[in-house]
Image (tube, rainbow, N blue to C red; front, side, top):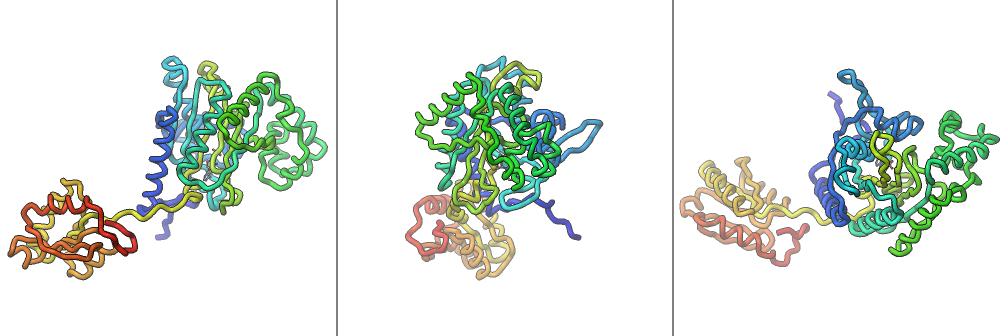
Length: 430
Ligand code: AMP
């Protein structure tokens, strides 16, 4: 049998899960600090949700979605969280319940991209969405949330790139200008860009293909084409960033891959990471027309999503997990029964316990207790049972004593909660 995990999809084993828990907990705490509440939407949505919102000519929709038909419905495993959140917002008429909605989400996304370091086919995103606030201060606060979160989790250096795409009218004028600029050099573009040329010339600016990148040198800048309202928003956004003391790079080449964006766009890149082309930790922007296009009222919105795998790559490894407080090593059947009961008692006092039920000899049990980094190893053999005691071996203080079995759980619980003596144990655990 040669069944392996699907290419680009990763198992996360228990030794790594601890870091995931920490990152997820940090994100939840941080999002809640800014007033966000969690929303959970299904992994499956109607394909049309993504193809219409993200855009028929985007890479994700054209090439990467996991789509299938079931029960006569065309479904897609979600490639992102924003469209689903907006769909849920409209479906539950949230606008009628509150003027401003702040939601966050966290979970796996699926895109059939070519796997590489930092680029997978199943990957995790954490994201935030604000619905109901059109103002530029909201955009700057979102950047503040992101940058303080990245600091908190220990990401060493980042660059915040910002741009404005303007409103729909501005975008349409920009599109015409781009067509004028690229038409004479159309045959120098990549095949994809030539094919999408008329439908979506903005995409050329976003392309990773070196031919497109070269052709785009000297392309017009959208920032010079903003109308008065777009320009006021753009100015207000930068002003609020300055008030917050957040450094940023104005990047007119930043268009991001999706059709739904309007006005503010941003991306945060890791500086000095070994992620190469995958150094973008997160991206986001305004999508002021999405709610209306989903059949809701005209509600402006902004959001971002960040990739958790990439965040883990650029944050420091935490210290290893502590071992159990007590490792129980019974020798013989009668001792096994006593150890079973004692384990349960210890756990009722909140002590983390591992019971060695292998029926092994003492030596391998002690070795296991030590390699787990346990604080105490409790030895129970016939001699102990006869005298109604247990042997408590302190694996960090390197001491050993006998205590009565009766009432042992309470005594051990107290000892486990005391600080461990100085130790040269490699993991420094209790
Ligand atoms: P996007 O939804 O494409 O704007 O991506 C937002 C963030 O999600 C990126 O900056 C990455 O951190 C992460 N991301 C997107 N696609 C992938 C992928 N295929 N594998 C891993 N992370 C990804």
